[in-house]
Amino acid sequence: MSDLTVQAPLEEPARQEYFMEMAKKQVTQLSRELGRPLTCCINTFGCPIV
Image 1 (cartoon, rainbow, N blue to C red):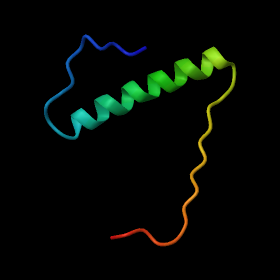
Image 2: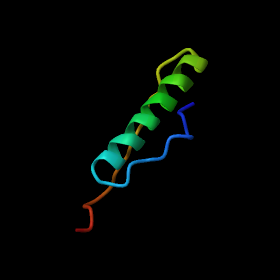
Image 3: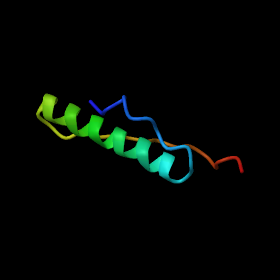
């Protein structure tokens, strides 16, 4: 998995980029372990509340 010993940056957007990179690494590793690409399906109904 990702290296959790490295502290996340405190400033945005570097903090967001840090967590996105960690998520990418975890998805890639899980995909390799399963031997297939991971997929996602999102169904929405109606209008979003703004």
